[in-house]
Image: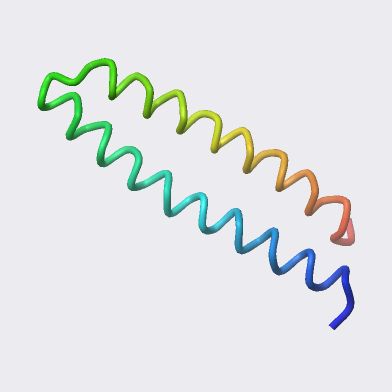
Length: 68
């Protein structure tokens, strides 16, 4: 397998893995807010946004590797 193919596979894996984490972050943010941990909810939501931003950058990296 070429380096390009490996990069595509690992970046796709990272994106998928991050998406799975995002679901868990939402679930735990909901639990935090339901238990009146507003600061925890806010921090998790900020972290969630950063993971989304990371996925955008990973998608950009993929676009440089995949044919248009």
